[in-house]
Length: 251
Ligand SMILES: NC(=O)c1ccc[n+]([C@@H]2O[C@H](COP(=O)([O-])OP(=O)(O)OC[C@H]3O[C@@H](n4cnc5c(N)ncnc54)[C@H](O)[C@@H]3O)[C@@H](O)[C@H]2O)c1
Image (cartoon, rainbow, N blue to C red; front, top):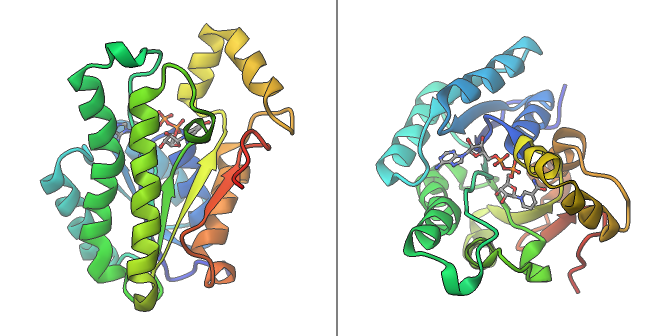
């Protein structure tokens, strides 16, 4: 018996990293999971892992920048599992290490199309199914608060994700849908590769944390998603939870 038995979740970018950790944590609480990723093999790997521990999962290759592909992925989820109860907008791609004066149109397009635009595509497509009890969880970033140099396109796109999270919380509250966000810090494969190439960045990142360790994609970030998706968070909406070892503080 899990707190998410009979629920269906869509988790974008769950072929790896934090998305995979969230997908595994939701599935361990009983949710059936649509594993969405542009990397078809990675999506199938996560889905297979989930099936191995006895939950249901469907791998759906999808480039979240393509609105028709997003609609098709949501329709495929509903065909297989009847509905969508939980939507986690996790996937995002961006070029970082770029001073603002060198940000290209392609950089902006990548960050905004994989960030706020894809988030809205999924929220829009899932809305008819989410009514009355639905949960949306969007991934933001502490770098928004810190204003990290070189992260201009990423930070501005993540700020837009924060905006849509608050607006949807207001609009959809009366429909029984909660909309919240997580700011994570966890050792995804991408973060690990970055830190292996630049060990001084890891030292700097850890020194800025109140709790001096990297987060775990499943036991730290995934469990926070279980809370927001579960019955204990039915009165929580428009909220951003920092699961980042005290790296940034809101308020
Ligand atoms: N890792 C951290 O500490 C950290 C910190 C702050 C915010 N975040 C946010 O958390 C989320 C997950 O981060 P992560 O480190 O696990 O990222 P990641 O890069 O490791 O994983 C992203 C996943 O999304 C998929 N993806 C990329 N582009 C896609 C597309 N166009 N369509 C579909 N799938 C696509 C990738 O294949 C990958 O599986 C992101 O939104 C990120 O901005 C992460």
